[in-house]
Length: 302
Image 1 (cartoon, rainbow, N blue to C red):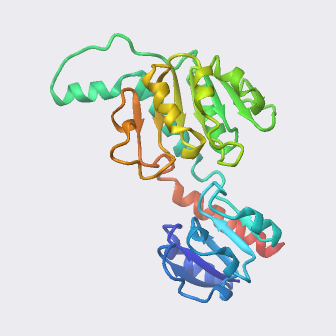
Image 2 (cartoon, rainbow, N blue to C red):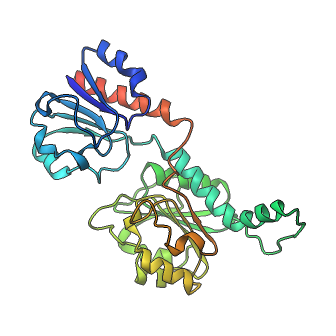
Image 3 (cartoon, rainbow, N blue to C red):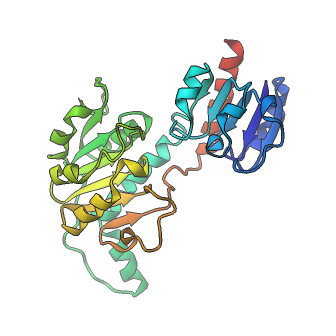
């Protein structure tokens, strides 16, 4: 198979010889927005992330295999992929562990006022905080019970939280107290102390967290978004934070990235802003490499 590999797979160049020894021909493109180092017709398989945001998939007339380095499919024209029977794999499970750890860390930072302690340390101030919160006993709503959501559920459960999942289907899973259908999300939001968004971005989930939903959330609850920015109506979120409807927010993704310097979320109290960084972990390289080679072998053996 003729394979185009992009720099979205950061360790790709170390593995090219291995792939070529599997009887594949390989070309490498560091930046997906750049001109291809080959003809579009040459490409039969790609390992990429946002390649089709910059190069129309229709140009790849011989494309039959896609391996994404991301978990989401929202950067790929999936209707075209299905119509042309192109095999597609995502990086399912590669980033779930660091993202789950990030969610826990963000909520603990808010609950334990770690930002204030950090500021006090800079000034050598011995000021005690008397209103710290515990995770133990809190109800956590995980919206999206896939790999990332389930890794979050495991960790919140370990802290003694009551974990409730919300998804398009229900199932029995020891990591959740129960999983409700997404149609019942409003009921779950009403009694949840922490809401963690790990669901994919689709037409149905666009702005799933909007003004009406924020009104239904438990007062002083915390929102964590490690999914996609557009699942949250950012204007409605800022309003909810202004009105003290929410106790805080941990935000790693945004409707527009990078987040503009003038955006009020940067300076709002009890809001943690990070630059779409929750997926980063020192185990990612090994997990991604493993899944790429497993999927290539499965495709070869089919």
